[in-house]
Structure formats: structure tokens, C-alpha cells
Length: 195
Image 1 (cartoon, rainbow, N blue to C red):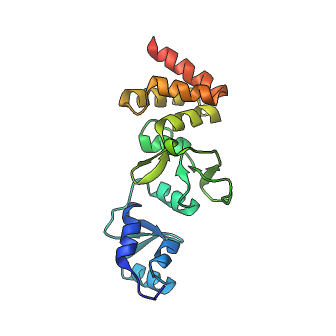
Image 2: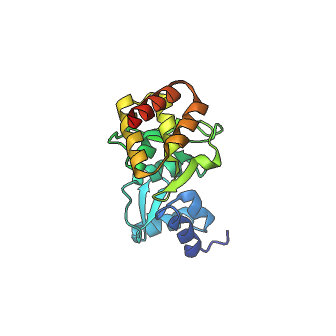
Image 3: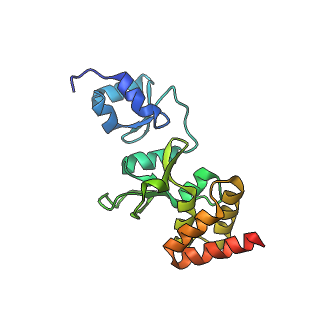
């Protein structure tokens, strides 16, 4: 780092994250702690939370808590479970914590964040609202497997099917691979939907 802040580099990073960036990302673009504080004082940056900032030209996101959780848990983490349902607008369940799937090597302690260490395949991750999020199918299967009330799962499955976010065959196939509670609940919901 040559001491000169690179606003273009920081903008490129933040642009792909709805205007949000971490102090670490800013340091990588040449911003010292002092410069970060200076730009917060001069209102070029907004300090959202310790170590997390937003460029002022980007409006605050209705998913700000999800961005904060994602940035706090690192670039290999993915928004999941009830939090993914919220992004897809598939349920009226409002999670008390942000649900994130991250690698097993990650730290397990994060206030306000529910960490899951399930394995994800690349085809089970997509992008919504600028966030990495589990696909609708993976989200529904995870929720069916982890114990969300069946009526909420039914509502989410029906909404996902009607919105075209997932197909019946795809969902049944993934549920069958997962087995257990997820398979039983998804089959039950799909069979009722056909009636």
C-alpha cells in the first residue's frame, strides 16, 4: 500500500456489495484508519457498524442487517435459511437472527448471527439484492430439514412454485437426496399441491 487511497478500487468493491464495504477492504484499497475516520467525519462514508461502512452515494438497503452479517462472516459465507426466505419474500417469518452458511473453518461466535456449516455446491448459491444467497430450492430443503413449522414451509413452497423460483420435480429430487424430515415434508406439500 503506497499510502494513497484508491477511491476507484473502493468504489468497485462497494458497488458489488450495494455500497457496503469493510475496513479491511478499505485498507486493501489504501485507506488508513485515520482516512476512514476522516471520510466518516466529512460524510463521504457512513459508519454502519464497527468495521463496516457504506458509501454515501448508495442508499441504505432494506437488507442492511444481512449485508452486515455477510460482511462480518466473510466472502465465502452465504445468506441462508429464514434469512434467505426473507430475501425471496416467500414467508412472513421474520428471523430473530441472520442465518448464514459458512465454511467449517470459520469462527463460530457472532452476535446476532446464526451460523450453519452445511456444505454448499456452487449450483446451490445465487445472488439476490447483491447478496450471495442459497437458491430457493436449497433454502426450502434446509428449512424443512431444520424444523421450521410445517405451515411456514408449506406457504414458502407454494409461493416459490407459483413465482417460478423452483419446479416441483427439482424440489422433490433435492428433497429425496436430502432424505429424512425434509423429504417427508416436501413430498407431503407437493402431493397436496397437486390435489
